[in-house]
Amino acid sequence: MPYQDILAQAWRILKRQRALWLFGFLSACAGGSYGNFNFGGFNFQMPSSWFPSSSHHAPPYGGSPGPSEDFWNIFTGISPNMLILIAVGLVLLFVVWLLIATALRALAEPAIIHITLHDLRQDVVLSVSEAYALAKPFFWRAFGFFLLIGGGVGTLVILLAILGIALIVVTHGVGIFCLLPGVLLAIPVLWGLALYFEMAILALLVEGTTVWQSFSRGWEVFKDNFWQVVLTGLLLAAVRLGVGLLIAVVAFLLLTVFGGPLVAMGIAMNAHGLMLGLLVVVGVLLFIVWWVVLIFLSGLVRAYIESAWTLAYLHWLEGKPTDAADQEAPPPAEEPPLPAPQAS
Image (cartoon, rainbow, N blue to C red; front, side, top):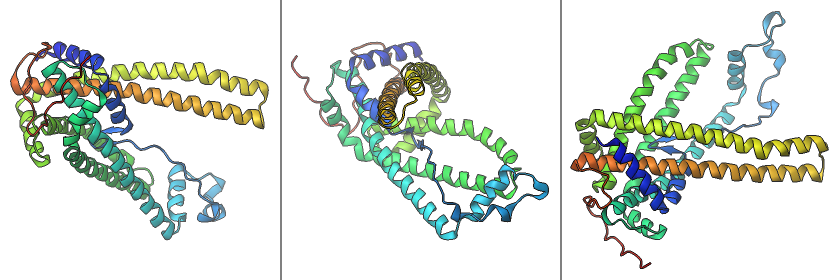
């Protein structure tokens, strides 16, 4: 398995094909990979009228209630109607975010993979519109794939989280020790599923299978090249981790360099009124720029990793070396004609 050639080829494609940067950014905006969707935290300020008076729940001997008792009081203090509204709102929020994230990934992933394939076949730099034209015919198949995986895995995670919370509440916190072995066991299982889903989406987009055929074809490739897939996954995970740590350090330095003086200026000036509002606006704008830069860098990593997976998948299909710039890769079934290269 020519790991060094695959990594070098993926890096060369990432530098040449600038359209990968945009579609990697869109993939990063989706916030997850193959069903692992990340949700931001929400802090709901609940009126005190929703909860019973603290005098009715005073702990014995004048002590303070424990964390599990506070947690239990929160759930028992909310009216049933409010619980239903909260549950419906969370479900709707999950559905909306799932559809948006799925659409972004269904656009970005085919574009990243087919830019890589096109670069191998013709060694021509594609524009964003040309990359979109290559990915467009695969949008609905990819959308169905990601929706099926994302919806299934996301729903399973939510159900397990609800069951875990219920177990912790009922056992007053003792149940968390029962969950730890299951969580540790789930880590390699979920990672193995992620590798299998990677093979399935590559079968869908590289070989042009249907959604249902991609699962069986992905399993064949995963089973026939099990140890190579695992080693490739470990290698790319190490690359992602190393680059992620570097990005985290850079992000912390940027936040310190730009945010630190702003906070110090506000403290030194004892800002209030209009000046305080101006500092808040500037701080928010800097945070938005900082966050966009982080997403962009994360998108570059995603594009590089997906290109490397595509090259590895072609190697498993054909057994050809991947370090030749003029390598001819087999076009996927039902792929539209490639656009003619633009005259320079």
